[in-house]
Image (cartoon, rainbow, N blue to C red; front, side, top):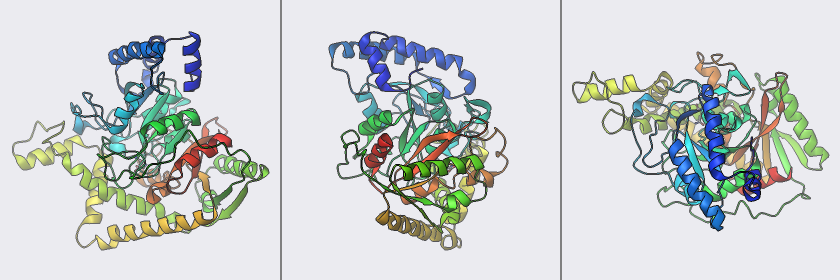
Length: 469
Ligand code: GLN
């Protein structure tokens, strides 16, 4: 199994493999591992056709910088002429009329898109159990979840069904499944990657990012997809630093803070705590400064996140009304019943729960008590985070309090599920970049993830740090 583009390139150059063969190998693996439920659709014919075309470009020496990279797309990123469903019944039969900016940019550099990947419905979840098309199984232990919401994106890479995948992260959906599957998952600074063509969940939190086996592939893809986009008014306006040209800073000593509450919070598994502490000790032994800091807003992070994201979701998802997109109820007889019945039959239980919660927190009489208060606390979190970064380069915590849990273990308990996001939502609330990197295993051999957050806009510096650790 290939775990880096560099390996693929070497074998392409030596003639060990060619692109059509590589694509065939991936297609075979997808077939063999169908039971993991990572792919919702495979673009077999198209991937083969593109492989033949790009193979010729490689021979002629004119191929793009992602030639040889076979990728999967989370099923909430649109691709012209292809179905997209956000893993929801409500988009049944819907085909996109345009491509997401990131899709255009990946294709322009000769990446091959091999299919679309299962996820939690509308990216709402932390285990991929909320998909209308069933859960994704963790390839390391099939009785366990993949993590979510980009579960298909993580497992497709973990199990060698593609080299890299693109997911979305609103509150941890790239980092947490990457952590559960032993991979690298990167959530960029808000606005650094265009959201044009990403089906909106909570627009002021959503961001697209990659999941891969290694940091160099993440950099290459970030170099390709990041930057301003006239189709997304919230995308970064100024030029951003290159992900590929930063000097290697092997000698420099950095200042790390770790939030001590993240290791003391109830529910953090002993192995997660132990491996995180081991990582911190290693940093110290390499001469870096590592300090424990306190972050008294940790306990309000999950409530703030769910207040604001459900509010935004209730508004974003109003457009799915049985009119313009996908599914319309067979039982509809007039305008009102078309909307009511299509929404009632089309959305799954978690999405409905969030639309109701979001509508409630925005309703007159409750707006000030919930929505506007949560906005204020969001500002406090941002300010407090900026304060920390005045003294530190990076903030460290576990990615998730636990390793991959059993399928069904938390699915009846939304609050327990929401608490799985306790460490990841911080970066989305503050808009800052964050990465999950593999950091050892628990006693069952399940991967543990470590999260490192950096100041706004320090995406390249963060990825560069990982290359030098
Ligand atoms: N688990 C979080 C949620 O359900 C994160 C989802 C995400 O990042 N898309 O909202």
